[in-house]
Length: 235
Ligand code: ATP
Image 1: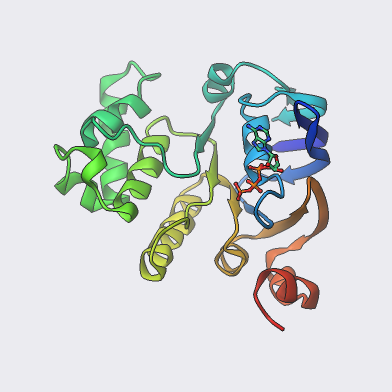
Image 2 (image 1 turned 60 degrees about the horizontal axis):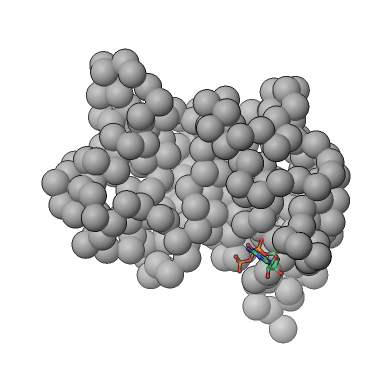
């Protein structure tokens, strides 16, 4: 479904991605784990057109989407939930969701999409007219995911959904990520929380300073000694 071939990306003279190749098959949850600064966010930004790939290719359903404008990439079915959530804090929950569905002019589809978001996140229905900036961190993460789902993406990109959230909330966010996937959305998940990411995903890549250094099933990497030492805090 998604294929990155030898993708490089730079910020001025800094090379943030040094030839990254990744495959995501339809129906999977794929995770990319790595430390601070490994290039995880850059990877997601590059594949949705927010950072230019300086070489390499990105294919989505075998169509070359390398460096297309972000609006074309969203229209093709790839939507990102950015790090730090980036909801519109002065708008209501409802307005945030409506903006997520703005590409779809069909009112009954928009309504159905919103109902689906409420099934996943009943709290958002209760808070519909609340100003989004006053939601708790966990609720804001739910809104950010709900907003992304309003456009019915084929591929959902999640940038550190666990960031800054209490462990209990992290567990419920990851439960919902699994549920979204079971209902048919393919997911590419970037995380520093390797334990959660590897327990949730089917396949995983380890990114270190802009390079993929390991790839395997998430299950195998979860039990890999090197991974346990470097990313799961084991001595
Ligand atoms: P984090 O979890 O901290 O966000 P990350 O793995 O997502 O880390 P990136 O944010 O992709 O890492 O950063 C990769 C490298 O690119 C880092 O060395 C970072 O300092 C650098 N970088 C990121 N954004 C910029 C920018 N706008 N300008 C210059 N350098 C940047």
